[in-house]
Length: 165
Image (cartoon, rainbow, N blue to C red; front, side, top):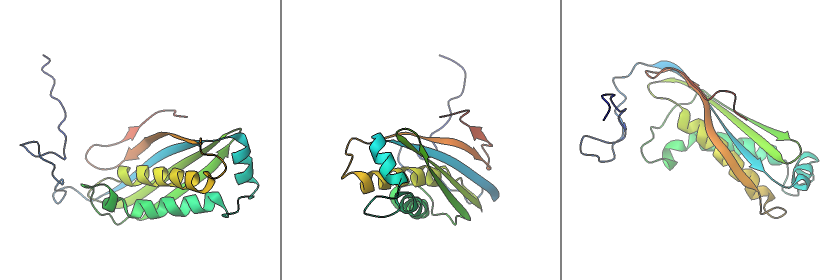
């Protein structure tokens, strides 16, 4: 066995029970997190989206709104997540030829806890919205590569996933 100390799972108490982290003693700092999700689809589905030929409307606009709404409701979806007063939510939705959509969400706040879950939730729900809007023409779409790209602020400092595609 190594003498290296393992990091603790902060959402478990001393007896291993689920526990919401007490952030009242943490410093208020500027915090930001960025996450991504990709939706792979048939090239014809991507063309339909790009040509605004979808009968339900502008797929990317609806996905952006869904991502923003999801970030604001993350604490209602993730059981031990704190409700946060987000100061900024930005969702970028971009077609990547020949068959993909890349979603990048960025969430910011000035507070006592990070915004990683909000950024991840925003990207995920935006991807799910694209799936929902396009499933009638392409049920084989794949949502993938959902991950935290970077974060900064708070006690744990900064994190960057590197050059991620």
